[in-house]
Length: 300
Length: 173
Image (cartoon, rainbow over all chains, first blue to last red; front, side, top):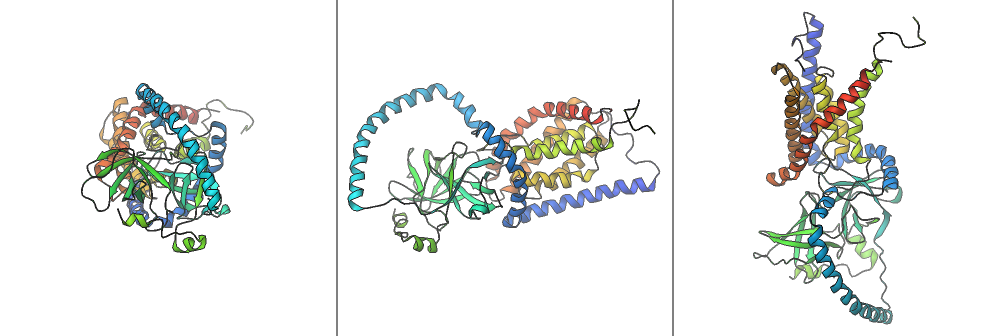
């Protein structure tokens, strides 16, 4: 298209001033906006309520579209699955055959285990779950990985509570509104989770890469101890996340640690449970041997 | 004046002329949070930003340059980026478009495409850097790179869509 006819809107002083004022407002507003952005990076809690409130508006539509379509799992994952279909198929068949054999062996062990537990009168009660909901939708246009949870303050959800699915950790609650709440996913760049290797309790830190994978770094060891296939669980160190929630499986080694894939894919989980934050009060309230659980984390 | 029916040569409704562009941008900003999509990476192009840029490239001087302030604030509420990011970056983008439309004498289709793609790339990269100030810069940019490429390829489609909405906006009663 041709450029606008005149830069100056004629001889009218009023029109000239209003154009000038528009630029002044725009530049001042832009600078103020960027300052506000830096402020809300430093203090994200202050603006969380505003954001949750606005997402209450779209939540009913997300609920309706979710019940109509069902949850769409990650698009990137689907595309990748097509590319890898052939080799994956062969590998999965091999694994299936192996797993069938193991399953037969395990089922007898399971029965034995059940009987032994009955003898000891151990009960596996999970008192930490506060409420259950499902993930409605998520941010998909920015580099921040925030999902919307279908329950909010109406069921006792509050900021700082961990969220897990059946397969493993999903993330933690960032802010809760009246009927929905925001969950910062495990894979977000700013989400750091203290973990340990399930096999031997080697302590490490997992941080998101923002693209669905996790970076795992050890705290103290110079050489790289990770092997593909290592299962990582939360250690409970530092509170917030209760110990022994499955987090990720190591995919491959890297220069400074390992690359891991979360065990629970938020795009595929049906229901998630919101847990109580792991604080000293809660540990005592449960009457569980809380401090005993993260103890192996200190002795690698 | 006869208010009963449409009159010959009567202009389009003023209300519709104003509400359609703003409405499309606001709807496109909020749309990702209405879809049941749990994304593991930024997979969708920034829909609101693309419409915002396309409207300004299609209809220069339709909006005052400060329109990025309210529309950016609305986008920030839904995008997940810290509030204020789009307020600042979108406004700077519309100033850049106003400047470029003064400099380039005859803006063609490829000019529009290049300007929109460049602005999307700059805005999304800066937004990602503001969102994760402590993370490794290369990694953060690598995160938004696929999204920028997809957005750049989708610009002509969004131009077409904006054109369709523009026809609706100016349709006579």
